[in-house]
Image (tube, helix red, strand yellow):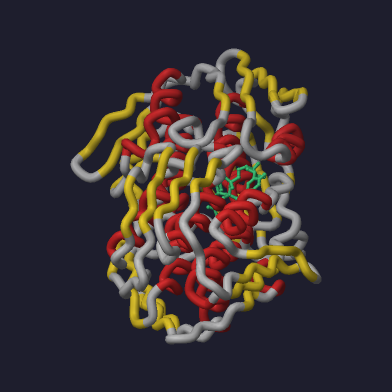
Length: 421
Ligand code: UD1
C-alpha cells in the first residue's frame, strides 16, 4: 500500500525493556468475527476488540453493507439488517486484506457478493484461488469482473468435500463462514489450524452453527437454516505477545506480558528459550527475561502450529544481533524478505537466497532512517532500532497503527526512548 505519510517513529537505542504490558484482542480474529456477524440478522456483540485502524475500516465496510456499528472502548456491536448489501468497494478493501472475509458470509446470507480484489500487498502475491474454488465447490458461481470477485448462489449453497492445496487461513475462513448456512455437510481437508480460525469457529458455534474438528486439519460443518446473533470475547493477540517476547530477549530486558496465552505460541517461545531467554508462566500470562546476548536461532515459518510467518521479521531482527549465524526460511509468503534491505541499512549482515536468509549476528546495529513496508516489518524494525546505537527513524508508521494499539506509549512505559511524530 503506497500511501504516503509523514508519520514516523523515532527510536534511540540501547535501553533494556523492563516492566509490564497487557495484550489486547487479536486483530486477525476480531476482524473476522466482525465480518462473520453478517451471518445473523440482529445485534451481535464482540468484546476485547483492539483499538487499531483496521477495526475502523471493517466497521466502515459493514456500515456500507447496511449494518449499524458502534465501538465503545473495544466492545463492538453490529446490528445486521434482514437484507444486507452485497458489495465491498475497492476504496475500503484496498486498505485492508481482511475485507475479503465478507465474501463467505455475504454469499451465504444474500446469495450474492461483489468484493473488490485486494490487490498488492508488500508481503507477496496472496491469491484468492482457494477461496473461489471453495465457494464453487459449495455450488456458487464465481468470476472476476472489473476488479471484483463476483460470487452468486441464487439457489443457496450445498455442502461438499473440499480439499485445500495449502492450509490457507483466509480460504478456510471463507469456506467455513459460507458452509455454516449451506444445505448438508461440508468437510474441509487440510484446513488451517490457527488459533484465530478456532476463535472464529467458536463464534459461529455460539451463533448456532454445527462445526466439528476446529484446530485439526479436518473440519466438518453441518449446515443449519439460520443463525442467531451472539456475544463473544476475542482471544488475545499471539503476534503482539510474540513481539513483546522478542523485544524482551533482544534488549536483554524483563517483560511480564499479562493476558498472553502461551499455548498459542509454543514454538516461538521454545525458540526464544534456545536463544537463552528465561520464560515463565505467570498467573495471567508469561514473563520473558534475558540476561545475556541472544544465541542465534534457525527458524522455518510454516502454517500453525509451525512458526508464524508474522513473527519472521522479529526472528531476523534477533538473529541480526545474536551470537552466531542462522538460517531463517520463509515458507508462507514469498516477499516477506523485502524488509531485510531496511535491516541491512542498520548494519545487519544478511544475505538472501530464494526463501532462505543467512544472518550473521553483529554485536550492535547502528541507527539510520528506515521505512516500514507492512505491519510486521514495521515491528521488526522497531525492535532492531531498540538495539541500534544512536537514532533510528521508522517511516510509514501508519502500518504499525494497523496492528499494534498504543505501540509508542507501551514502549515508553517499558523504558524505551521512543517518540511518535
Ligand atoms: C492470514 C493473516 C496473516 C498471516 C497469514 C498466515 C489475516 C488478516 N492475515 O493471511 O497475518 O500471515 O494468515 O498465517 O488474518 N494463497 C493462495 N491462494 C489462496 C489463498 C492463499 O495461493 O486462495 C497463498 C498465499 O498467497 C500465501 C499462502 O497461501 O502464500 C498463505 O495465505 P493465507 O493463509 O491465506 O493467509 P491470509 O489469510 O491472507
